[in-house]
Amino acid sequence: MPATVLLLNGPNLNLLGLRQPEIYGVETLADIETASTALAESLGLGLQAFQSNHEGALIDRIHAARGPGAGAVQAIVINPGGFTHTSVALLDALEAFDGPVIEVHISQIHRREAFRHHSYVSQRADAVIAGLGTEGYAAALRRLAQLLA
Image 1 (spheres, rainbow, N blue to C red):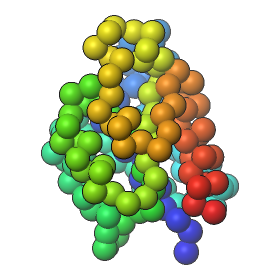
Image 2: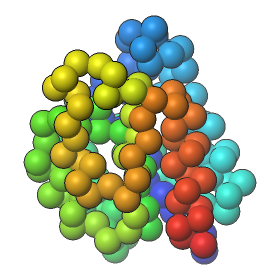
Image 3: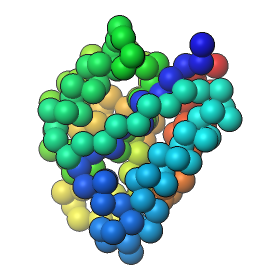
Image 4: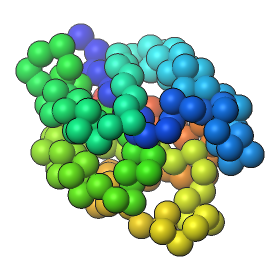
């Protein structure tokens, strides 16, 4: 049975391709999920994708990722969106997850507004990828394939 990765996307990422394409590009979340699923399969991984604009729903999904059950996974790729800079609760949920966590940001958050420079999630993440565009998701999956091998 292959290791499974949870691809977790936070608020407003459902608007990818429409919201600020000059920053986030024209790919949609569906495009990212399709490409990530194909790459995961080629790397011998399973993938489950989840997006929510609600902090509690993201936390509940992280709790389910711990298992047992259909929601259990061995690793998480997370783009927390705006919760990156505000959510201690998301950090606490990730702290309760035992597998590797990679934080992804499409834009280079350190070249943007000062409030975007701090990430609560980074305190738990095993790696942080920022500024690679949507290729950051692929880089995260490749790294997780190495870590889970």
